[in-house]
Image 1 (cartoon, rainbow, N blue to C red):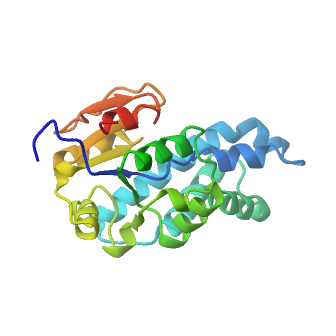
Image 2 (cartoon, one colour):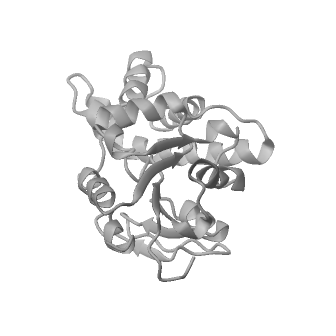
Length: 232
C-alpha cells in the first residue's frame, strides 16, 4: 500500500481502549454497604488490571493458556488480598459480573460511527473470550458499530503473540499496512507496530513511551482523533 493511502480497516483493543476497566470497581464502590471498597477501589482497580495483564504475559510465555475470564478472576483474587478485601465472596462475584458490563468511554460511539460513515471497517481484536466480549459489546450498545469481534481464543495464546495479530488479515484479507490498530496499552501498540500495522497508542494517563523495539506511529490522549488518523 502507498504510505499516504488511508487504511481500509480500524481495529481496536477492547479492555482499556474501548471499555473502562476501572468501571467495575468504581460502580461496585458506589453501591450501599461497600464502605471498605469505597475507600480502596482505585487501588483495587489498578492492581486488578496489572495482575490481569501480567498473568496473560506469563501464560503466553509458559504455554499455560487459560481463557480471559479465568485470568481476570485470578487477577482479582490477588488484588482483593493485596487491598485487604479478600474473603467476601459476594463482592468478588459482583465485581466479576460488573466486568462483563464495563462502561465504554464517552467518545466511543461517535468515533465508531464516524469511521463507518467514512467507509472504514471497524473491529475488535482482544484478549477477551468470545463470551466476555459479546457481553461487553452488547451492554455498551456497540454491536451494530463493529464488523467483527476477534478473540485470542481462536489461536489459544494472548497478545502480543504474532498469531493474534494474524487474525486480522485472516478474517479481513488485509495486509498489515492496510490496518490502523488502536490500543490503550503501550506494549500492544508497539508490538502491533512491529508486526506492520499502523498504530495509535491511546495514552489516557500521559505515561512515557515503552522502551521496546518498535514504537506506535501516533499517540493520542483519547479516541477522538482516530477518524482523522484514519484519513477522514
